[in-house]
Structures are given as C-alpha cells and as structure tokens.
Amino acid sequence: MIVKACYKDKDFDYFTDKENGLERHYGDIFECSDDLANERIKNKFVKKATKEEEKEYYANQTTVDDDIPVSTEQEEQQMIDDINNNCTDELEQSNGGEE
Image (cartoon, rainbow, N blue to C red; front, side, top):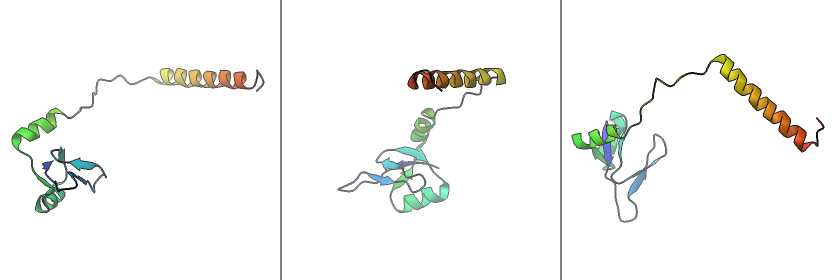
C-alpha cells in the first residue's frame, strides 16, 4: 500500500521505519505491506495516500534499464588483467623495483 507519513508531535516530525530503519518524515510518500500500513494507520503514523500522491510516488521511482549491454568474458578478463598489471606496477614502485 502507498502511504503518506503524517506523524508529528511537538518534538518530532518523523518516525523510524521498523522495516528498514529509515526515518519517515512528515509528508513522505512510500510503500509498505498492507498489514504494516494498516497498523501504522491505526497508530496515526501514516494515512493512505491519495490517487494524486500515488501518481507522484510512481513518477519518482527509478526503473531498471534492461538494455544495458553485458560485458563479454574477454572484456572482463581484460579488466582483470589491467587491474593486475596496475597493482604490479604500483608494487614495483613502492618497493623500489624489487618484488
């Protein structure tokens, strides 16, 4: 369920999310399980998000791009070789050319 944090008292305008330890500040819009959302609504930490707030929430979500090219084994081996060569060069420099 998409909810909006509405917790506020004289000292604090946030609560700590027991699912992930994040601070949920007054006005934050986020998703949580229906059971937890109902518990939080009952305890007045959140209220159910409006349709407009749900649209805002989904509009701000990042998506995973499935079109990102995957490196080949040859490219990966070249990267490993480059790292190893770089480490060897640095080791030689720090030891004055001695290994």
